Image (cartoon, rainbow, N blue to C red; front, top):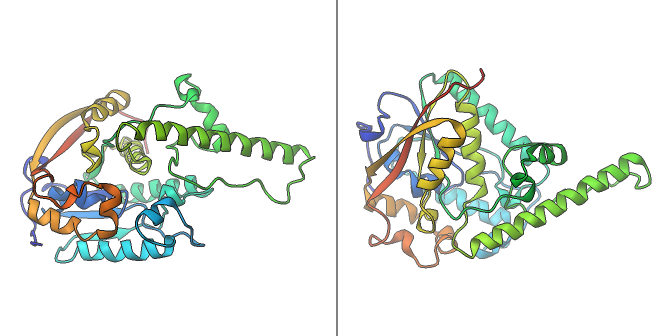
Length: 323
């Protein structure tokens, strides 16, 4: 692996502003935004770097060859530390758990992440936030979304924000709630609706996966919170990166265009050269994740890892409400 000292930021124009790269998981920054990291000028946050307490056992743990979340996260944190060796990048690993482990605290975690991002923006006026565009096969919207009933989810789940789509944990009704009382019946009814919504979510995701690797909901959560926070005046520039390996299944351009339309943004697409040898060496540090992410072994192949990365640089087309 080569060390890249601070250098001109090239076509992304990052040399004139402090830069925060948001990596949903412990491998996403090097997979998808290596060109930014190789400039040596960014701060990197891994949003979902927390270890569940108590330990859990998810399908992803087993796919990676681990017995439970304790083993998985210990290995992944060590891999991430190795991947950043030799750089001078400031790396921060936030304590929030990823969707596969998420439970009742998910919305609280996302709100805390949004607060931390606001604090960073306040401390770095004029900074730039780099976030995923969310490439990959898109999951069909739920019926209540197609009918425009977005308020329905906020009343039932307690938030209108991104769904924790990978969560395998649905919180139970309070054990001491009397099922014959009004509050107890209401709690059971809400839990039944939440369970049904979760089951519907998994069905929609399985259908999407038949066409390729579906967009990761943790990426969507990070992107949407970044958009929400950065849109508040003074508006902050957001640069979106195209997610690898998801882009091999569906490129990010259509999703970038959809984001631009829905958020009132003007996007400029940029193609940036990357040091492929360095990128592959650092991706290779995440050994536990490579096969589950891409069974074809392309993530460490110079024949398949692109020599460029695609980004979309935003500027607001309309002003949002004040922070």
